[in-house]
Image 1 (spheres, helix red, strand yellow):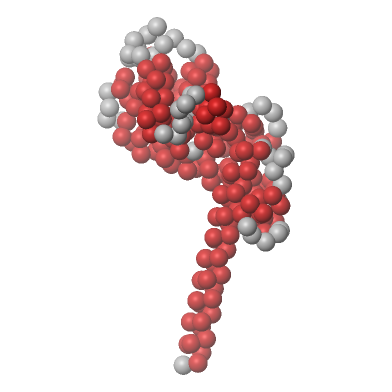
Image 2 (cartoon, one colour):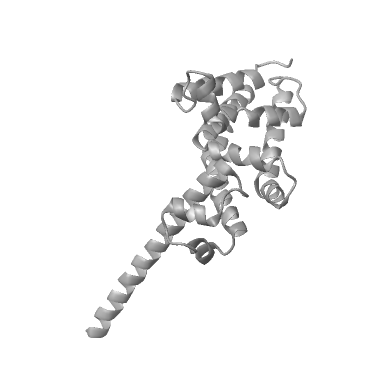
Length: 218
């Protein structure tokens, strides 16, 4: 009986410790995404992340190893969530006629960009320097996304729904459409609109869909 009680107590303690560990890691990742996307990699120290997350010092090293590994974990979580938010739309779009499918997916991309503005903030920052972080993001995420966008462009051209843009032009017009969310503070200073209001997001989504998929070749 005593051994059984001790085992149960140990199991409960282990479960609590595991839960606390996951909570700590979650806090660190949330703070890391926020600070890396706001101030960039070089200006963000592991200590500043730990302070923001309100956890003990050196827990990033304990849980993730190095700053580089922690940055990758932050970006991986953020980009995976962004991609997962789009996956159901890709499935739904298979049964939609070509022109409306393109518009539908463009709108979904804009809305995902509003939900995860940190993605474009990181890309606008990291895309400026040809270093290990950009290479890692390109190989892990953006090369595949670029391929998906090129496939979308090919489909649009086949049905005459898209203007005559090169793949790079189409890709960067689409990606830059998330700038108003990534640069929300500037947007608020330049206009009376709140960029994350649902009506503002919908208007942006409709505008970019109409721009990139007007329904006939230009």
